[in-house]
Length: 145
Image 1 (cartoon, rainbow, N blue to C red):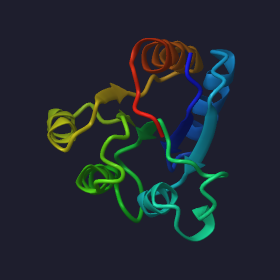
Image 2 (image 1 turned 90 degrees about the horizontal axis):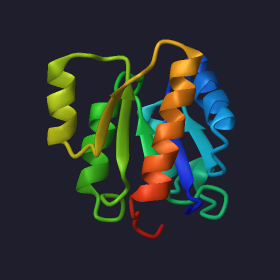
Image 3 (image 1 turned 30 degrees about the vertical axis):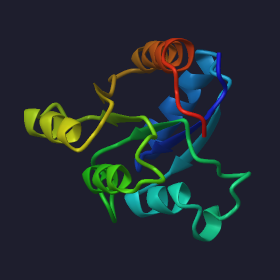
Image 4 (image 1 turned 90 degrees about the vertical axis):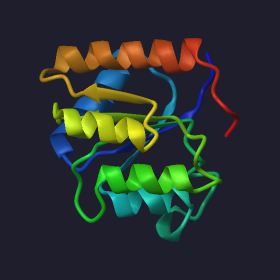
């Protein structure tokens, strides 16, 4: 299994906690980085400002992206990443509470690799993270960082 860095863009502290804890329960060994909004996400991805250290903040091998965030929402981030030739190969999984068909269709049109509605409980998050681990890091061939 390939070890890569995972970037999670999530503004809700409770959801960040659930993601982090459920990844621990699924024994995922990849490095996990959190950002709280779309502006921070783009700074991380471009190694700007406090994220300038490329060793400490490497290009992620997987990006879990919430759609509804402050400053710059996930739709804007998705579009910006897909238009940037240095970032466009990063696999992006939209992980959101939205069940709207418009968000689903728009996310795929903008280049999302997957669209997942957030589970409502901890056990659901654990199961989801286990499946993500198996799929993205056990089955799929990812580009080198």
